[in-house]
Image (cartoon, rainbow over all chains, first blue to last red; front, top):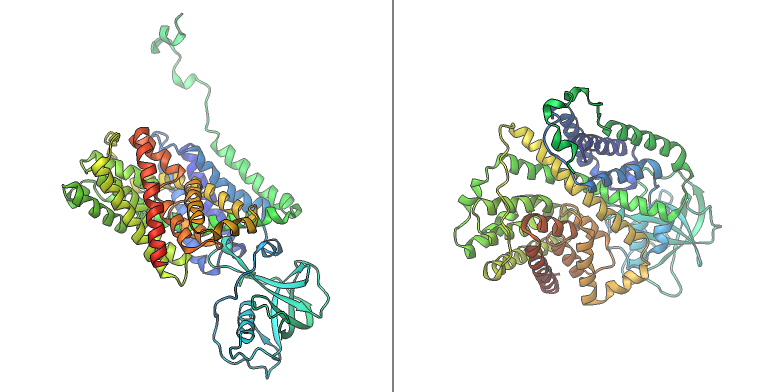
Amino acid sequence: MKRAAQDLLMILLGGTALWLVFSGEYTDYVKPGLRIPLVAAAVVLVLLGAAGLLRDSGEGHHHAPRVAWLLCLPVLAVFVIAPPALGAFTAGRAVARPAPPPAGDAGALDAGAGPVTLTLGEFIWRAYEAQTGQPSNIANVPVRLVGFVRPAKDGWYLTRLKMNCCAGDAIPFQVRVRGLPRPRAGSWVEVVGVWAPRKDGQADAQDIGGREVQPVKKPENPYE
Amino acid sequence: MTRPADVLDDSTLPPPEWAPRRGSGVPWVFGGLLVVLVAGRLWVAPRLDAAALDAWTTVFVAICVQALPFLVFGVALSAAITAFVPARVWTRVLPARPAAAVPVAGALGAVLPGCECASVPVAGGLMARGVTPAAALTFLLAAPAINPVVLVATAIAFPGSPSMVAARFGASLLVAVLAGWTWALFGRGLRVPPRPEAHGGAARWDAFRQAMRHDLMHAGGFLVVGGIAAATINVVVPAGWVAGVAGVPVVSVLTLAVLAVLMSICSEADAFVAASLTQFSPTAKLAFLVVGPMVDLKLIALQAGFFGRRFALRFVPLTFVLAVTVSLVVGEVFL
């Protein structure tokens, strides 16, 4: 790989990273907190490439191995395939998982002002606590959950993927919705309902007795 | 039969400026690439609707994007050291006796950041300047595995489990020192590379810039290879199969150790891949993190190139066995 190609490739990589951040697409791949390091790295790449193009003369042997061309692949993937955030496909592949670790504070839910908005993670955790006999006032409290629709053999699930670090390690949080017709698969919806304990006593899967469901816009950060 | 080049001397040839101008094709390649990108986004992307392809691409791009800042800053630090620290500093810091120099070189690896592609040439330079090969090899193993950038990346990839960072540090340092001592006692077949040329009158900033570009190009391509492998495993391998292997104690550790060799991920990014292998035990992930920076396909190629094939044939198996054994012990005791 010639030197000028390396310089242009660095500009291309930096430009792609800047595009991801400023178009907001980067939240499909990584956590929002990576924004600043990503912009900084992109600026460094663009400056390096520009300096190389402007300052280096034609002489000198600074050839890079052919494997460096592979750096074009993520750029092509971002623009040509433009994949959406992970969804039902990934959620459907996951094997059964234990309940998520405690998240958020364990304070009492205030149901006075209508349904309480919870993340799926917190709903599952509170329901798990209630199911295993620990005090948690999830029972009979109307809650509001947001996720996408994943059809399954035993009904349909409200699903959201949880990123630990990047989309490579996403695991699904899923709650089965009972008593409501299934909206279009993969669409984002808001479900209002009340925790419905499972009769089989399975602690690693939770149900919600749905009262109403309505479509919503895909959240800016599709992951939890 | 004589070739024309032997008959003609320079005086009979037309002056060089008469030759057809062979312009560089590079701008055209990149211009074409930009057209493909815009056209792809406008006409191809909206029509693609294959769930598996989408998921593969998302995971692949996610690993690349997540690793990018760490790669850039790791390479910047490593280039700063190459450009601004004279090599003779090393010989002053390291003791003359190999047995004592090995642990010091290991500890130096903890302070100085450098990804594995950078550490091979640095180790070669150290040897050429009179550092004991065993100590230089310990540095080669330790530097990419336990430097601050890698440890911070590991802490971010495994939030809430500092024991993974500690285990990675301890196990990697132990493997590097053990390998160095073993080499000091039994090592043979090493070819000390010729002393690399000094950077003449080039300004330090230019040297810095060029070292950074060199490392980025060498490491970046292999990072993409790692991303491809990780995304493929994530999407193609049936979850049950992975879970099946992941559940078997020693087999799972060996599986991830071999995977680390095959994936050849840069040590600044490998923690994120390890964290994504959620089905595996912490010990197996530790083996992945310890083996990866020390033995992988690109390192084997680099080592054979720098120190000779006979060296690689001995050193690579030694490191691999040590890394797996130490990871098993450390993982079982501490994780």
